[in-house]
Length: 496
Image 1 (tube, rainbow, N blue to C red):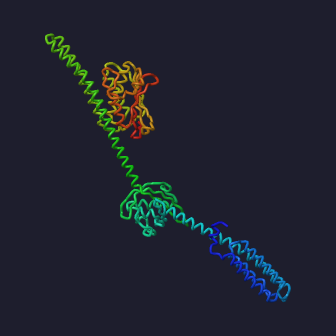
Image 2: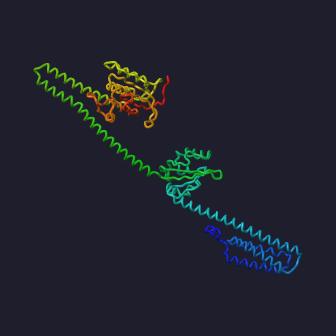
């Protein structure tokens, strides 16, 4: 017999005492049976012995008692004084035997049912004790509410977390305890949705919300809850955890990272500024050295007007170079002015292509590959014109007599924000080496003797301001391809 059965049968008669009691009752009934004549149903009292066997924890003891009662009934028939009609006497003894065995069967069935019931009660108590131990020892607050938001359960961790004792909140609405008033409407909507449909978007998920302690202070909490229907009513169990420290640690780490990022950005700015100042000094220093040298020569050649004039012309050209470089620097700084507006791109491209033709000293070979319908993008038209003019000018500098193609096509880039448009300029020049592609957008990097190295840097800056990017590749058909990708912020194309 296992421990659970022993626990279930606790409180029964001790087996030895029960045997003595049954023997004494059996002896008394047997003496009574022998004292009366046959025909008085003297075998029926033996049923009492079977009933007493119910208090034994062993099922077989009942059947042994039934056997003993049957033997005593038969002995009583043979040893009792004669009397009564024979068939009546036999019928009485037979009925007594039937009643004895029916009683034995019923006693065993009742005992089995009783043991099963007691085992179930014991298992339930053990389960409840284990559940209570788990919930009470849990570090997380565990609560239970019904469909009317009434608190049904409140564990020890909830008492510590919110400052309410279980006796203070059980039977009260959770809205009047830990839910801030500004969230009452939302909380009621979730509970009503659960009661009406049996489901709720937050059911089975972990989410963050704000709750309040008994003293009224609010704090962030991580909350997960489940629900089940019992007797037609919804019961919800919530597990809650204070995440104040976690959020403070995250904010602290974020603050440190932000400060470190700002420090790195500042260092990069200072480094870039240092490089820029060095390049500017280099670009201006070269012609200034020439100006000084030629001015000294002009002083020496004061008696030779023709030589002096030539030197002055060289000085003027060097000054023009410096002024041109400084003008390009001023144009580069103007890019920081950014005014985005809806712009029709096909018209803008046509204007810049016409401007390039007018600015050239000879006819340029250009073609445009554009969509049939007008394309509207939210851009700064002045900056886009400036960037496209730079790209077209660079393309013709790569090959003055070659054809330049300007192409506008829809292009999606998952890593850059989704849908957008690619504005490409393709030339027929010698193309780009890998070494040049890696440095081509670096400020002041140039492959031309009279270049400033700021044109493509300006285009890259324009792309970044618009949330796009600029790429340089070699075209499969020969030459280079510069592509300015712009996101479609308007999310629409106007059809003409």
